[in-house]
Image 1 (cartoon, helix red, strand yellow):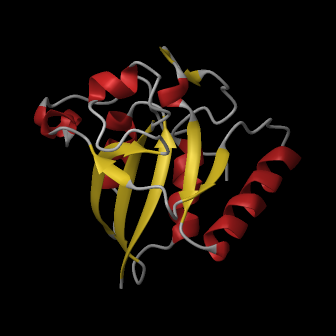
Image 2 (cartoon, rainbow, N blue to C red):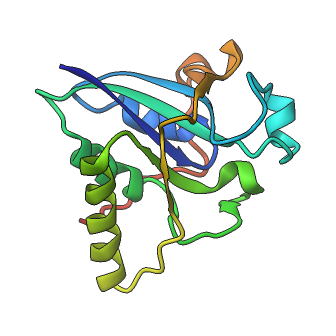
Length: 162
């Protein structure tokens, strides 16, 4: 069955890149979530005034890959302890967050964060309900960025921690 998950982990290009490579992921779409401006542009989001985070909508087949596996990948591809952005990308639009769809996803997030805290990490990731928080697709030139330019992410690498 097709489901959607929403992850903010800094620059959406790298996040999209890593999720697209997972078996069972049907699509990864760069966009914006969590702010107050309807249909914001990249320029508006970069101003830091809209309240949006660069977010990737991951469409997946839950018979092939589950939310918890996606969640663990999310934590492994960015610095979830950084409080002011991601790597060289500083600003509120680059903060770490999971926009959960239901209580089960929220509980998976809480349990995973507790596990990371027990390993000594200070998790800065926010948990935000996806309800009443629309996802706005980013401009076309942001979609599939690394594949279009035949490059690999500069600030997202996978670091196994689970």
